[in-house]
Amino acid sequence: MPTLDDILEHIGEFDLYQKRAFLILCFLSAAFPPIYVGIVFLGFIPEHRCRSPGVGEFSRRCSWSLEEERNFTVPGGEAHGDAFAGQCKRYDVDWNRTGLSCTNPLDNFTSSWNWSNIPLQACQDGWLYDFPGSSIVSEFNLVCDDAWKLDLFQSCVNVGFFCWLHKHRIPGRQVGGFGRKRCMLITILINAISGVLMAVAPNYAWLVVFRLIQGLVSKGGWLTGYILITEFVGLRYRKIVSIVYQVAFTVGLLILDAVAFAIPHWRWLQLAVTLPNFFFLLYYWCLPESPRWLIAQKESDKALKIIKNIAKGNRKKLPPRNGADEEVGEKRVPSFLDLVRTPQIRKHTLILMYTWFTGSVVYQGLIMHMGIAGGDIYLDFFYSALVEFPSAIILILTVDRIGRRYPWAAANLIAGAACLVMVLVPEAVIGLIDCGLVLLLPETKGKPLPETIEDAENMHRQGRPKEKTIYFHVQTSDGAPNSEQLFSPEFPHDDTLKEKWNKNAVTNTNHYSLSS
Image (tube, rainbow, N blue to C red; front, side, top):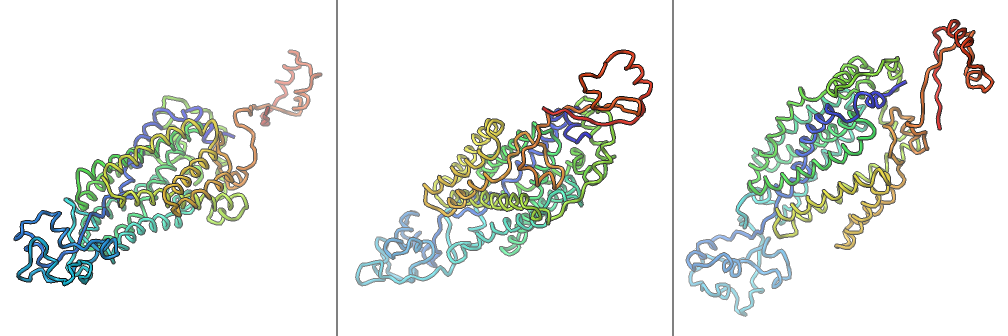
């Protein structure tokens, strides 16, 4: 009996209707980077130094330049044995004292002419930031002893990602209660509202709360869009849409870089990258529900209506119906335990969990390192986004020739080795391990999506290629020859016997298949 993939072969696997839906969903993918890596700009750490009472007035009186003010009033890290002394400590002196020299003011506070003997104290009056804009670091002073709060801010979105994936362990199950489309729209709405609330958060505590809410829903919206489009297209186009959907994310990185360059103030930047999410609510009228999900939910009539719309949009005709609807209704609804119940799926689940963890840690680790490495942050970010385009081209050229596992494993090997060569960071180790684990996953090249738990469990076994199987119908009756007689070389195929067979044939229909 035909599956949805079989029907798509007749009405168009990736024709006008699917291309329009795919383009619409690519905009959703392009809007995800501000949440995933926006910390680079929102949490940018500018050069900073302690604010010392009286220094500003004394600097103006002496007509110092900014560089002279730093040299005379900011502790040198080398002299005090602390590289961050100039950022987190200040001289314990009274700059309002009369008689200070404008040429060597610190000489008045030491008898040995050695500035390293002057005592230091922690910053007690805030910091001064050498940055024309603003970030959450400069506004909430997330430096020195409070630097961990910036990591907490980013960790909140990652915790939200994890909580969403834990709650929606199997997309078809929990999302199954709402549907792909409805779940996507709900997450878009919550993400948009929490993003606006972030932009107007009165303090750091509320900022973290709204960031956590964003994490709880944003990853779900992006993944649901990915699932929705892969369920719309045929087997041959699954590869290209999944890769290009990721390329749209890369385009979003470039857009984020340009917007952040134009808007250096974090609150306005947050508002600018959030407001487009409200336009995505129009998808309610632009996108249909996934027919594959509707079939799994035993809503075949609704699925058929959407399939007809796809055929109409592609200017194709539906194949004749032959009772496939009754078969799909018998499938068991999957549960979380199905991920660990059988050995093969359990192995694949653990490997995929690890590889998701690896990809996130390595990717975000490199992004965060770029944000604190110095230099032009906008140019560095631009280059880091550009290098993702060649990787997409390599995938498109290799996955059909080599398969999925080997390019995946090779990419993890190269990424881990590159981290190892740079600074022997921990990300290298997990990347190299991931390279080996990926090879234990089943190859999906040229294979249809599994429809049941049993299909997923047996993916590692070599199945018969679909295109080499020919299905046909043979009518039989008591007076008609059976299948063995029909294919026997001695069976006489004359006109008399054919006429007799046609007269005696009844409506009993058997299905046969020939496989090479």
